[in-house]
Length: 203
Image (cartoon, rainbow, N blue to C red; front, top):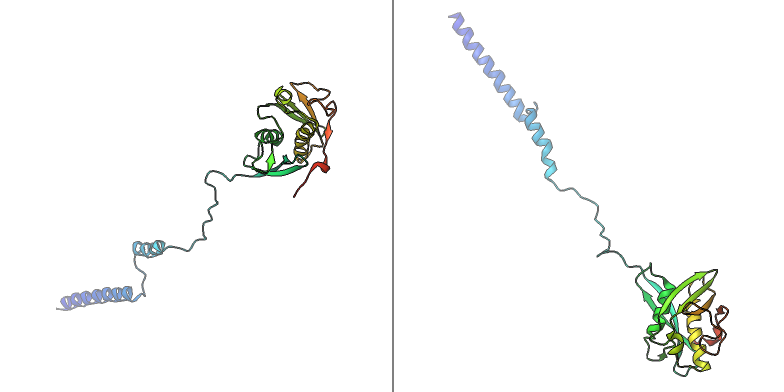
């Protein structure tokens, strides 16, 4: 009888302990198993966190760097050289060659007149000790319209345009690789020619 009572008491004792543990568990007094702790700690990861704004640079391919050059063409009365601006997109281009190419192409404004024969070719241009050496094809002479005024405006449209570029102070003209006494028949071209501001009208 006593053994039976002791067995019943033990059962109730163990049951009481089990209920106490369960109560402590649900009331937060006892920590849940490690697996559930890991789940609780992992839960906040699903909440989006505030991040700094992403700055997207405007680069469809790559940003185009621009450079401006100044060209000089004759006005309609052949009295002055007037400037015309051009914007370049290629920063690596040889600007001296571009200047000559644009002079040959002619002005964009209807108020200005070309100063170079349209069929002339630039054979070579290089810069040495502040002098731009410009070598033209023979058409520079054979297709030029002549006259002392035409001579002056052609030569100084080249000189004044090139001396807008840094590092160029004068221009030496060559035709088919040779220096000539008067490439266009009037002005001495045996020596480098310097800029003439008096031929420029800016307004």
